[in-house]
Image (cartoon, rainbow over all chains, first blue to last red; front, top):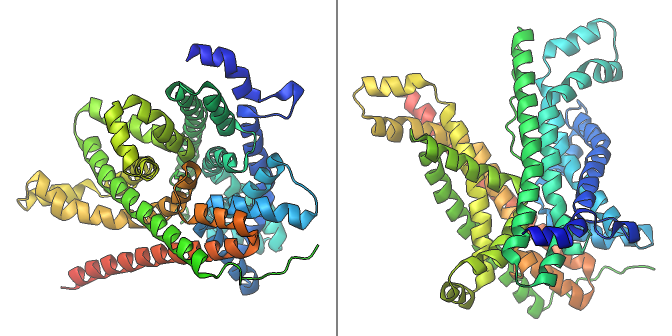
Length: 245
Length: 237
């Protein structure tokens, strides 16, 4: 295992980076973080539409979310892989395709997380805000969303974990990321699949497990603070940390 | 460049049959993996409830490992690495009997058993201890308290997340395409590359997946409703 790491460790970590496009584990993390950051605004808008009092906003948002929850991510990747170059009229690299597809797919999951955060903020908060003369946007931006986003931080970390895991599917459209790099190393060595895939599995495990622990600690802290502070009728969000695969 | 949408190339007998086989294999994958996940999930939950610290820790490690490694990597591990670890004649026997399918089922099933056991555990933890105590006070043994009082209630509580997990499992059968199982995603990919009717074939596959996912969600709702009704009937009596 050590000699594989010595021989191919750098390739697994950054791909051919100084001499070529970035790849490997670093690309996986970059794609995942970019995917999360870019899907965040889409998710907030989608969540706001989902809890809107206007039916013409609420129903399409619910339909979009239901659609992507029912769709295998692999199918969405293939759609993106063929549709994006056609829509843009020029070739799109694997890295960009993967980020775009993740944004499209994960926005729905993130929107559900944010929605339950919004619904977890007590009704008294929005009533108090409107009695102070605040309009919809003021109430949302200054009162509801800050609390909702803070409370759904652990669940958002959960989404980051599932994004990291889902980035591995970039393999099927030959995106230069960690899983793809490891399959390349595996077919180069040919006789050491146990070692290669153990290295890959252990690396993913360390990365995701650390994030899971951070999410759990955050969750406990937020729950404790909420039960101490809130004596009103707001129910605890208590979102279980179930991450998509 | 204009793209004429034209289903006539796709909707031929040959492709329809291939798509039908793809659907069948997707459903087979889903059912086999689900059975493994359900049986293993219950087993893990039982092991976790035993007083042995060692067993509890082992189950916790199993769950964390399967939840924190991408399913695709788990599938690759089963497909590429496990055959090296098994005796040669066992590997040969598995490969003779459609190895890709068996390894994909194992990978997906084992991965989701971790999720199932977590759902069942949180269902059981939601049952107040008073339930056990009243069961014992009524003369039930510990096991029959669990069998007749705690387990039905816990299953009912865990049902929404179990439906969710079933949906996730079903969607993720598509990953078996990566090791060459000819299920719906893989079939539509190969039809795409032989006809170049990208839009049409993916529309068909997408619609089929939506229908099957919707069926799972509806079955979940029906089960939830029938369990709720059963509770209400019991309370009204």
